[in-house]
Length: 116
Image 1 (cartoon, helix red, strand yellow):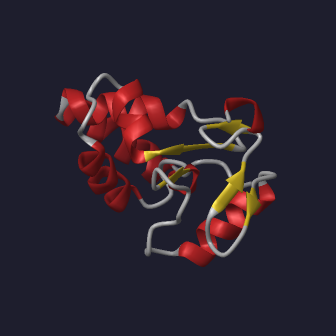
Image 2: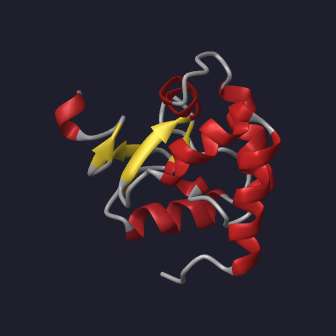
């Protein structure tokens, strides 16, 4: 997997300086490990801003590849409509089990077998 480019690192720093809530989201998303799949709501809650899941989506929509956006899905495991094929491919590469563009099981996170 390619490393972060200088451009994406600059984006992350800029976002962190602009808004404390967005900075908390960035930190939370950057901590997600390969195979860890969570929901937008999970990110918001972990960052200390429960019920701000839409703001998480807005952030990821502008992050390009600066953040591991593919590890964030809807609460029920469905993939959002933006780049679902690429998201599915990246999740499969991280050991996530998918069925019809929906996360069935993941090694870590909301969909890990031990969390059910």
